[in-house]
Amino acid sequence: MPLNKEATLRYHIIDECLRNKHKPYPAIEFLMETLEERLGKKFTVSTIQKDIKAMKEDEELEYFAPICFSRQFMGYYYSNPEYSIKKVPLHTDEIEALEFAASIIQQYKNTSISGTFSMAVDKVLTSLKAKRHSENDVNTNIIFPEKSQDFKGAEKIDFFIHCIREKIPVSFVHYSYHEQRFDSYIVHPYFLKEHRNKWYLIGYSESRKSLRIFGLDRIEDILMLKKRFFAMPGLKPLDIFKDSIGVFLSGVGKPKTIKLEFTRNVSGFINSQPLHESQKIIKYLEHGGIIVTLQVHQCPELKQLLLSYGSDVFVMEPVSLRRTIEEELEKSLRNFKTKSTRKK
Picture 1 (cartoon, rainbow, N blue to C red):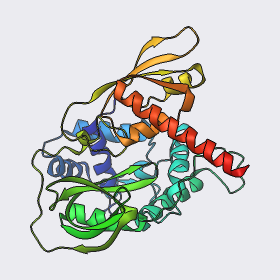
Picture 2 (tube, rainbow, N blue to C red):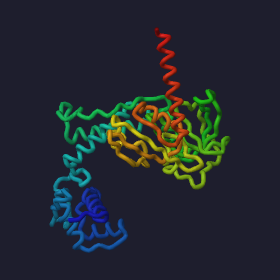
Picture 3 (cartoon, helix red, strand yellow):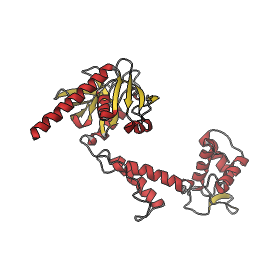
Picture 4 (cartoon, rainbow, N blue to C red):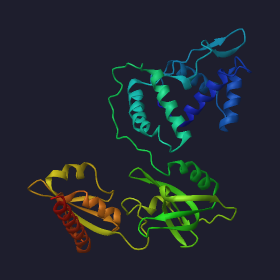
């Protein structure tokens, strides 16, 4: 039978009634009244009977609920008192999918990002192991995601989550790598963002009167403030980094068209793992390379990303970005030559 949201709700309510030890052997009239009270509409005897039949026999649902009718008490019950549709075993492919997801999140388990998060990961892994695996299962240790390293500032995540949810302004000092100094801020925190295994706080700065980004690893002396929280009108978190690489705030102005040529050495990677959601391949070159365009703001993160591809990328447009990359490469070459000369 086709499964829909209302039917699923009915199955779960019937399941709760059958497991209610304070009101055992619910009659069909009681089930109808409970469903009407919980879902706000009337149901017929025929509907309830079909639901019970589906819970017992439907192969798509795979509940195979052991529902019986007691003539002595004129009501329904589970022949297995421990049964619940919420405890129905997962399919093998569903377990494998969860195991894959669990292997990805397990890399965070031993970091200090969040004690609550770590406990949740433990519960998922323990539950999956109980479902299918033993410690010596031949299928274990076949997925090795990149390990997430702990970092300074991770212990502040829980604190800021609390302040964001409860809309509590905070004060702290933050160190700027660029200016090489600490500055004091009063910030109204909005959300957290992760980039390259580091976490950042995004919030409204009272002194700068604008949205700002603060690295958690550079925040010290945090205090919660008893003052009115300021919510920026029209703020849409999902749009803030839409046209950016990394944690660069888009700010004012439209993103620029970035035109790049990649060699055949990396074209496959660029094709399968785009640099940005706006990436478009506009030409496949005879030697195996590709030309792509991005619609993003020029920012330090974009520059660092392009420099990481070395000689396998050429910036076609804009000219200003190409000159920036050229200057950085020339500096790098001079630095290597200088260091090499000293070593000799």
